[in-house]
Image (tube, rainbow, N blue to C red; front, side, top):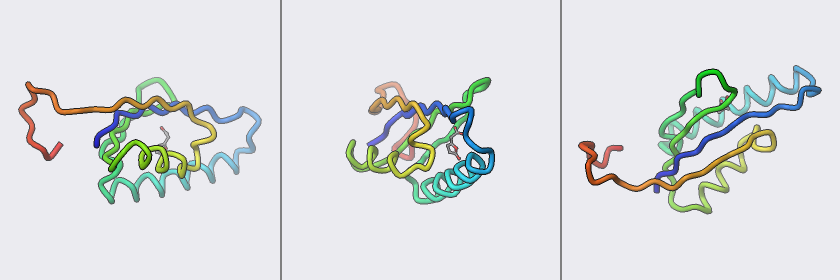
Length: 96
Ligand SMILES: O=C(O)CC1=CCC(=O)O1
């Protein structure tokens, strides 16, 4: 199942820089692992915002929720999830 996920990062202004950098480094590691696994299919920066638009490919809603919970930045993100399905006019196959 495909999900459009928008993540807005809101790190506390008083978070120690070293802690923020450690969180971001760990987030990057996990994100790249999930991309390699085919779960995190797309990751795009929203220009001008500390936010991204992503496409996740997971078995079900619970799996998406569990995956998002594992992200180190999860406690510091506003996350919006939209389920996706195929569009009848799409010229793209199932390779997504
Ligand atoms: O910077 C972001 O949008 C949050 C994030 C997602 C993957 C990552 O490495 O950072």
